[in-house]
Length: 336
Image (cartoon, rainbow, N blue to C red):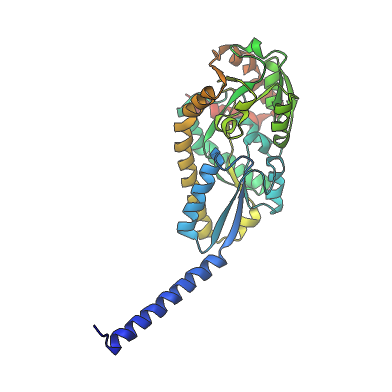
């Protein structure tokens, strides 16, 4: 069937419109500002869960403004150097463990204290309520760095190459890698071990060569870093439970309009909720995986460990002063 001139003209106009639309879409995509989002662990880790979800949400809602580039495995910075890089604006966004934020913002040590969280309901009250918002705002005012989302809480499990851990005395004499964080150093001293502060970037080699006997990490990190290949004993201590919030540089955030900032923050919040749901459902599955792949898993009675370190909470309160005490009182009250 032959087409009349009007039909042919309509098709031509429609085709030109489609080409013009594609060109405009391509131009918007090309004009989107790249955001390099970094973290120190493999892309399969908990950080990757949140980062990829954020990239998806931002593409859907802000694709002509921001183009999230997920950079795993410390390719743009190490976790130890990332906070300063955020302040300088040489890194746009990065996941940083709470214990690595505290050298720049000491008040966050309140969340590093051993056994500070008393169950899932307590965690939700802190993360989803005024305490988390207050800490994020204080962080911004003190350092200019923006906290986009807290994400999932990760309990740290202890692993070592020497012996199974069933009670606190089993830690005596073990050389334990710890972050360069005074709370964590003193906690392992209270457990009777020999804490050795090391940067994260030095940790895998130290564990593999035997320079240290063991360490502790979030369960998914133990799996994603394959520490189970050379540390055959895993103890479910949950002595530390830490956040690794996603932070953004003031330089990057200042390039967004107030409306764009609100949309971006909402995307980050939803990505954090996605990570929480994913991670909380997978912890026991990962622990089983570790057991199935050669680790001897023990679940010690935590009482002896708690008794060993509870005095540290009051000790640090006395050393840090009234601001620290006021925050600790709020956290303890949230557990009631």
